[in-house]
Image: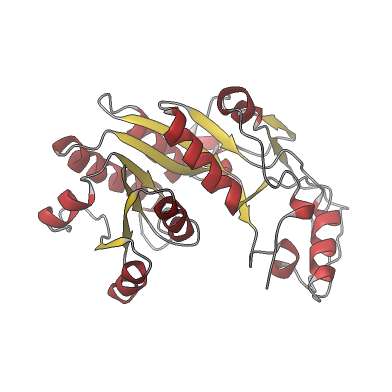
Amino acid sequence: MKISILGTGWLGLPLGEYLLTKGHEVKGSVTTPAKLDTLKAKGIEPFLLNLTPQAEPEGTIKSFLDADVLIVAIPPSRRSDDMDTFHAAQMKELVKHMLEGEVRKTIYISSTSVYPSQNREVKESDEIKPEVSVHNSIVLAEKVLRQTGPLDTTILRVGGLMGYNRIPGKYFAGKKGLKNGDSPVNFVHRDDVIGIIEQIILQEKWNRVFNVVAPKHPLRRDLYPQTASAFGFEPPTFDDSDPVPYKVVNAEKLDMELGYRFKYPNPATFYYVL
């Protein structure tokens, strides 16, 4: 199978490497020329793409989209003056090229940040409105992809990506008086995201929305000090005198529709390494 990955960063690159081991032909995109050799060295066919309207060489993007499945793994730009709408414009540009080519099956890496924090559990069936979402840009991008009739698009609303060198306690080492100690985390290990993507392709689970988070949701006040101490960082401290709104992301649909069993169901026992 030919698989193209738009965005070969912390998730997209190891995803591409894994798919190669399964016998797939893999194409990957980067936004800077310096990274092209990295992809080539790993056996991934490299493409330089920024996905800005009218800016991509027609032959380049046409060749990139010569695939059976496209995986979109680019985050919204934080540098655009029109950040809320720029990412959706990128998806519109992408869809235009897809409709002119052959690829019809897409996996879009979205985020659980589309759900507002209202001190409750959230599911895929919840109505998402851009005006109450933390990331309007992602909600609008989802809408563009899901409302394009000829395309089969599955949305993965991925939680906080952790594992390997992404260690929760490292990012808050030595912090004092953090305000969200009693908030549960919605994390997922990178290996599980890769495994879920593989299963969606194998089982052909198209035109669906899945929350992608580990089943266990330890509290920040427990997880951050634990993972900080385990790697020699100064544990953070918390002050919950002013509670912060939270959400618990339900990912049971992965079990019901994919039969997926998490390799790392608890962020407290993720595989981490400095």
